[in-house]
Image (tube, rainbow, N blue to C red; front, side):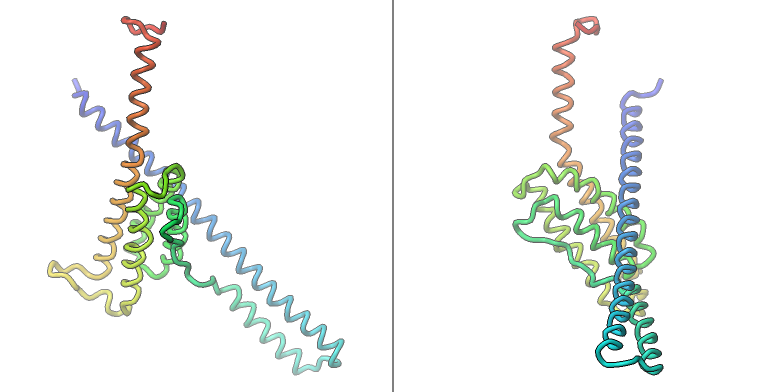
Length: 240
């Protein structure tokens, strides 16, 4: 017969894996939405550039005079280059919006957007860990919506997401790419591996914070369950 404690542990692990998988799916869905939004923004900018050039040509013809072949060719070339630049440019990298008085619920979404924009600067080895952090942030965003700014866990997350994580990524990106593969630790770890280890620590700390935030609700469910059993069930287990 299976040990009840072992069965409970296995069920808890299974539920944790399911919850983690759902969080990863939500994180990926949010990333796809952001990518679609950025693509739409690039398309709008490109159309705006083309429209502005056409308007300029129209005004030139009305005010200055007929548009010559040279001006038309230059306008077409310039318009094509400008439209291509507008379609490629994705805007400046945004930093996490972190202030001492910022609501805790703002941090996960702002950090998730910023971290997603940093993906192209990070090694492929870090992609799974970035996905894991994004999944944790998706869960924390809902949890922190009910937490006051002065909560100790929220303050720890503010320092982690607003300072320590950006510093880790920023310091890594400052190192020239040809130097990142060099070993920097006595155990032979490369800079890429050190970065991934740091991201793993961040993900583990986010998991710990999420667990701490949910502790009160878990205890409340247990207490409420025992109350309902005592209130509405008789000694034989039947509902009164």
